[in-house]
Amino acid sequence: MKTVEMKLIATGVLFFLMLITGVFVKKAGKPYPVFLLSIHKILSLLAAVATVITVVQMYKKVDASFWIWALMVITGLFFLLSFTSGTILTTDKDNSGQKEKTENEAEPMKRMHVIAPILTTILAALTFFLMY
Ligand code: HEM
Image (spheres, rainbow, N blue to C red):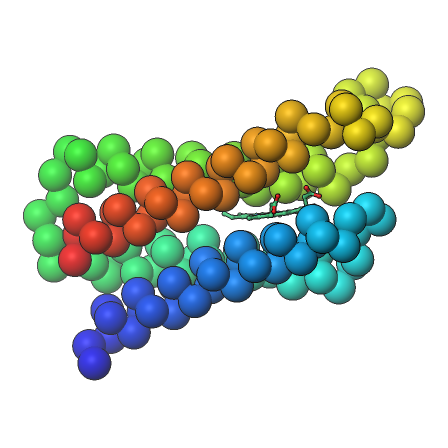
């Protein structure tokens, strides 16, 4: 198997583990278990790094069009949105920083942290597919 295929598989596995640990974190609920949350964060970081490494290697072999470039940038932005929404979810305070967030206040960000990761995964898969 060529190294690019191995990198694609490794990236796919990291994405899968990142999504699965996210579901476990949600199931565990607040207060989020520190160990599980840390694993989720580390896997997210590793998935982002693996995505960049794989794309860089694939980029050397293809003539990336404007649309592939646009897709790469949008994927990066959704990754960022996943990181920020996830991080905001782990803070207990509301925007004023004075009182605890209520369940209702946390709901939009929870929804964001479902939509953004799913779109990140789809966009990353599409980028890989078009560059392969
Ligand atoms: C520093 C980065 C991150 C932190 C601190 C974080 C934190 C969290 C937290 C607290 C939850 C539980 C949410 C809830 O109770 O509803 C969660 C769930 C989840 N996270 Fe993350 N996350 C991070 C990055 C990511 C990234 C980059 C992805 C994927 C691109 C991701 C995918 C998910 C998924 C799929 C869930 C499950 C959502 C559900 O089942 O409703 N997370 N994360």
